[in-house]
Image: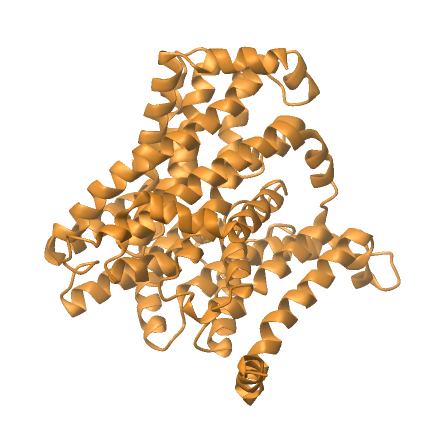
Amino acid sequence: MDMLLEALASLLTFESVITVLVGVSAGLFIGAMPGLTATMALAVLLPFTFSMEALQGLMALGGVYMGSIYGGAFTAILINTPGTPSSIATTFDGYPMARQGRAYEAIAAATIASVAGGIVGVIFLLVLAPPLARWAVAFGPSEMFWVAMLGLTLVASLSSDSLLKGLLGGCIGILLSTIGVSPVGGESRFIFGYPPLQGGIELIVALIGLFVIPELLTMAAEGRGALPGQTELRKKEVSILSIARRIFGKPVNLIRSCLIGQIIAIIPGAGGNVTSLVAYNEARRFAKDPKSFGKGNVDGVVASESSNNVMVAGSMVPLLTLGIPGAPPDAIILGVLLMHGLRPGLDLFTESGVLTNGFILSMGMAALLLLPVGLLGGRLIHRVVIRTPYYFLVPSIAMVTILGTFALRNSLLDVGIMLILGTAGYFLRLIGIQPAPIVLGLILGGIAEEGYVQTLMAAVVDPIPWLRLLHNPLSMVLAGMVVLGAATTLVPMWLARKGLLDRVDEDDGRSP
């Protein structure tokens, strides 16, 4: 407790507050640019922390991390382009809200949910880090396979028009994930004699291509901007207090999304790319009006943004206790710790408790600073997007996306892949195949393949090798969750197709 109070005192100084504020602001605007991820934001700004003390440097990077994850919500809401992979689900309801003239309402809801999620993640990290880390170690290859399969059950929920088209999109994503070097055997696949393809398709490249380019082509074809030319919103829609009352008035969605984000974040290798998708799916599954999701339901924005901001501190659990990065940006944080002679483990919380607790608390401060920075930045970006004519907006966004794609690996091949996927995504969207299932398949395909192959390799002497996928209680629980998740999604769809669900609803609504 003494170390915690000392860490809090070191945090409540003018220099510390300015450091975190600058980090949050820089991360926010970098995260809002398509192609510039949280990992890249940390890598770009890392050299600026070399001259700082250890605690100040970690505070700055924690603010950048928190701000960049949140910053992806801006473009997701305003131009239907997730700035970071964790903001994919924010586009589902955020952009429809913006098209309805409710852009600032969506931004305010995303901001409040992000603040709440960030604070919850910090509390979890302070209180539950060691026991949660020990639990995370139990996830081996078979468990990761079932985690990936559980994520793939979301395909049905992400395909509101047609389950078949959603499954087709998921299969396309899985096929894309097989391009390049095999994650286990090391053999090259589907490179067609072109060695640069051995690196595979970068997730961000696919994300930009499938989300950004089709939207730009649609805007150019229809001769419209990203949003209607509406500059004034009704007072009740922009009232922060009314939006906060709505979010906290229905706390179940917020609490459930935060718990989902925390659970997924501590699993090393799962990352935050699917966190918001899982939280969004559960919010839709348990909603009283699931059909309103995808059409501008603010609960969808809250579920996505609260869960992906919990991930920021949540992914630090395996990092600080075991030295295992829970997400790609955490690897940079690990490098900073090692650079200052700090090794993850129990000693980090005892011998360097002031520094560690100060770093954790600084992420809580960064979450609080998201409120003023996010609302002011959101209002500014919203006005710019609305007032910019489409013939300026489209080429400007195209230039930023091309530069961002090239900057990932300094590769023109990535730019070419992005343009090819974008063109294909435009035509796929015309026939009803949405980009979300494709991206989900791309994210989870590699995780599922690696877990499956490693499990079967370990079971080579077993009489029935595939039974190794169910070799412990945790694997069986996860497999049961996959079956349950698929059933709770597919059975209502089957009942609705047969006309039974509507009949049940009518019977339930009939007066006695």
